Image 1 (tube, one colour):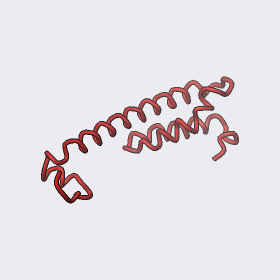
Image 2 (cartoon, helix red, strand yellow):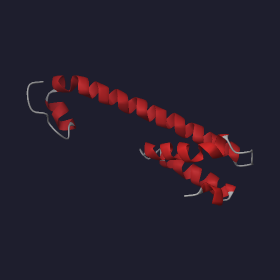
Image 3 (cartoon, one colour):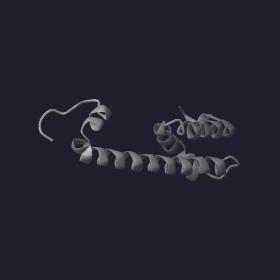
Image 4 (tube, helix red, strand yellow):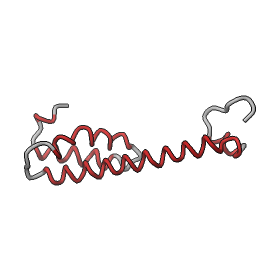
Amino acid sequence: MNLERLPNEEKLGLCRKYYLGGFAFLPFLWLVNVVWFFREAFVKPAYTEQLQIKTYVKRSALGLLLWVAVLTTWITIFQHFRAQWGEVADYLSFTIPLGIP
């Protein structure tokens, strides 16, 4: 999609949709929002909708960083304690590794 062809009002609407979509456990939408609209929010000359787009881009970046931090923490804890958790960890796993823990 070429953002240059969209009017500013539609850019704001699209940015808002991606921002709100990230709350549906879809942090990839926040990443897309930051990548697509970063230039619109911080590089382009000022226009009326830019302040709201800038807010959505900042919040999307913050939500994405928070999501990555939580997911990284969970993966680290799970990998470290999986063997000690026994059956509970096996139920949480998609694959059960063979061998001695």
